[in-house]
Image 1 (tube, rainbow, N blue to C red):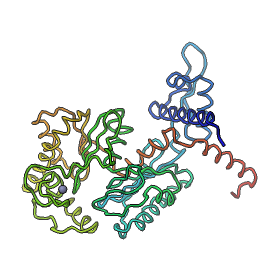
Image 2 (cartoon, rainbow, N blue to C red):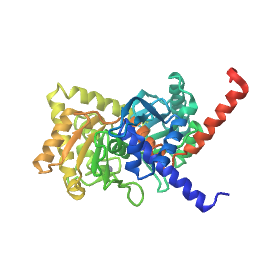
Image 3 (cartoon, protein in one colour):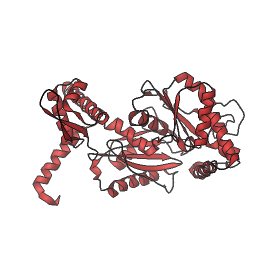
Length: 419
Ligand SMILES: [Zn+2]
């Protein structure tokens, strides 16, 4: 049994490895002595850690050897070995079920949307998405053991322990251990998170807001939701359901919302509001099939809004309404950036109206819309979040990779080329 002291040493080692991986990701070409300086570790300790990470192919040495000033010694730069490991990203939303593959720097290799045959059946849908993910790995001639982790963006919220699907108004899946179910299917550590939070965290880690600690993200599709990162931490709330602003009272009577009230922000500022005002919203939407149909209508309407004056005004109206309803929240949290994304958030017409309204309400925070620049898709964001939580993290089990690597070497030595 490991002693407490050996456990402490192990966790310190893992912490140091994670710090080195992060520094190399952020400073490609950095050498061992600068790494030692930045982490406060000795050169000898750094040499050992770097050697371990080179042994498991997570890092590689850059070709250029720089002559160190004044010392006459050559130093070798280091970078993340983008062929050293891969990550899967899954998105499970009523309107967007897809799979993505990235390398361990977070760069996209492939993305494909998956059409589940029955999205209302949770287990069957997980089977199909997992099969599509593994096929993508095989198609790219990547060994399955090179896939180190996977992330899942969901249209819903997990319970406070982060296991059970607690609330998913559109999918209406029963509570079950989503993480465990997917770990069994994919055989790697899984991170599951609400889609809005996935995108917000991924953008602050490796995206357009890298390094920022305070952002407010609004994702608008048929419905809408927000994710807030404050002081570097995602705001989860007591029940882990923070961010559902769609059902805030809008202060005016609108159409009947799915929650049974008739003055929700959703019904004046999101895709539902746009469809409703154009007379295209189905009175009874029951389950995911109705949602898929409405989502298709919405995408068509957004396309037409570029040329049809009436539709344009409706989309503008929804964008302004969202802007005015966000003012109080923005004053309360004072973010460094506002991100607007999702199928409706990506519309230039909606985005401009949203920004104009904020401006008129004297909110001067810079807004980044998914129309101005690329914001991670849910599946890529899920992969990025999983990278941050499972690879560039002290929980990453490098020891296991080292053992597997030495085992593989021995096996190859024993049995020759037929392995
Ligand atoms: Zn509502």
